[in-house]
Image (cartoon, rainbow, N blue to C red; front, side, top):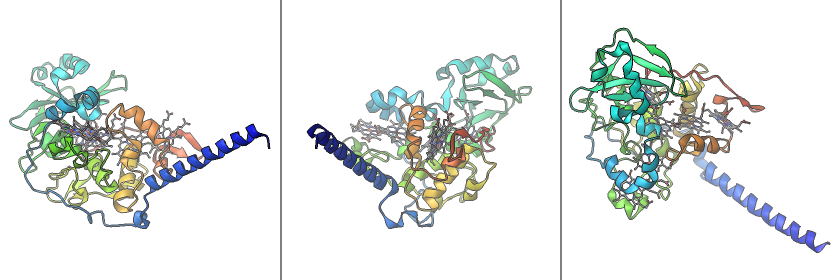
Length: 342
Ligand code: HEC
Ligand code: HEC
Ligand code: HEC
Ligand code: HEC
Ligand code: HEC
Ligand code: HEC
């Protein structure tokens, strides 16, 4: 045999062997190795919860960012979670919205904006850990241009709504008895929990650190505490969880109708979330999780796109895509939510 060709073939088969090992490894990692991995189970069965317990005195984001300013800090003010609720002075261009003549009677009281992309609400402080919310709201297109105003004619403040209906998913550390929050907006605590500062020596102490390899059901509970809209807390009846701390099992107190994953009328975003949570929490699958397709920090949109096209193929793909043979066509997406009033 031609020696050069022989060398090339050997190199090729080595490459092929390495590639198949890598594919097999990836398969094992993404599909899990336990034979129990796809057995249906009781979503409440694992772990514990903090239902009705006091909010811990957690380490706040300013302190985290003191040490993590160059990596996480560099992008936090562009992250949808970091900006979902902001003070007037941090709201940039959105402040121009207050020049609307119809808002003249209330504009001077508006202190905070809720929503960072297509739907914006206006808030003001209403005592410790509370906000009043304005009925008037605005719809923006993806470039930030106003496309609609709703209830603009009679702007009125509602003192109870934010605490009763919104706080648990748009603020941090909500005490469900008083409906007051410990910090406005979403702090690191909502996903990383009650952080032990010893983690700087041993990152295994940190939920969601690289070294920990958190269980799929644990990761899913963290994201589902807010992203499973239309669930209800059994203990309070509120539309958000009762004292959920990252690491807890959400489903011990949060009641969700998983059949919504099969509801063709639900928009594709809420639907893929319902399906993925059901796959993990009820059907016992270990993959994919939210993090197989999404990366919360660092340019989350571009990363989400890149990660999702190589995720294991399954029914979740067709919550958004038309069919296996036509991955270019997407199902229509109407951005609506009863819970968030848009
Ligand atoms: C169960 C948790 C939960 C509750 C309760 C909740 N929200 Fe939301 N909200 C979310 C999530 C999750 C998103 C992001 C959804 C997405 O992008 O698909 C969101 C997004 C928003 C947005 C931004 C949408 C955009 O396109 O910019 C606004 C505004 C909003 N919610 C307002 C409210 C208001 C007002 C209330 C109370 C009446 C409320 N939400 C209650 C979880 C919640
Ligand atoms: C919405 C949930 C969420 C919030 C809020 C959040 N994180 Fe994270 N964080 C994650 C997830 C998920 C990961 C794992 C890697 C990823 O997906 O980006 C992570 C990873 C990290 C990492 C490790 C980075 C790496 O290279 O893997 C650090 C450090 C971190 N977060 C710090 C923070 C700090 C500081 C805050 C508050 C300013 C914060 N996080 C808020 C979800 C969150
Ligand atoms: C006194 C400094 C300090 C403070 C305060 C601090 N961290 Fe860290 N953190 C570190 C160091 C050092 C490491 C290990 C090296 C690294 O990965 O940056 C680390 C690691 C991490 C990791 C794991 C990164 C990985 O490798 O996966 C996460 C997540 C994290 N920190 C989040 C937080 C959050 C959230 C807070 C606030 C609640 C916080 N940290 C507060 C210093 C700090
Ligand atoms: C405490 C509530 C809360 C938790 C916990 C939470 N989110 Fe969110 N998430 C939100 C809200 C609110 C928004 C919309 C913010 C806005 O636009 O105003 C959002 C937006 C998003 C978006 C769209 C933003 C973008 O830039 O594309 C993604 C993707 C997302 N979250 C994924 C996750 C994942 C993955 C987790 C779990 C690691 C998680 N979230 C945990 C409340 C939460
Ligand atoms: C198989 C991959 C995959 C999984 C698993 C997945 N997502 Fe998504 N998700 C996507 C893709 C792709 C998009 C972008 C869709 C679009 O733009 O229409 C998206 C969009 C979103 C959005 C809306 C972003 C926006 O711009 O409004 C949110 C919020 C979200 N996902 C949260 C989650 C959460 C929470 C989980 C876990 C329960 C999850 N996703 C699991 C692929 C996935
Ligand atoms: C939440 C919605 C959502 C889910 C779930 C989802 N996708 Fe996508 N996918 C999108 C969007 C949005 C695009 C971008 C389409 C565009 O830019 O025209 C896309 C693009 C793609 C593309 C590129 C198509 C092309 O040829 O241009 C592939 C391949 C793909 N997705 C595969 C998958 C696979 C595999 C899954 C399941 C593991 C999946 N997607 C799940 C929303 C989703």
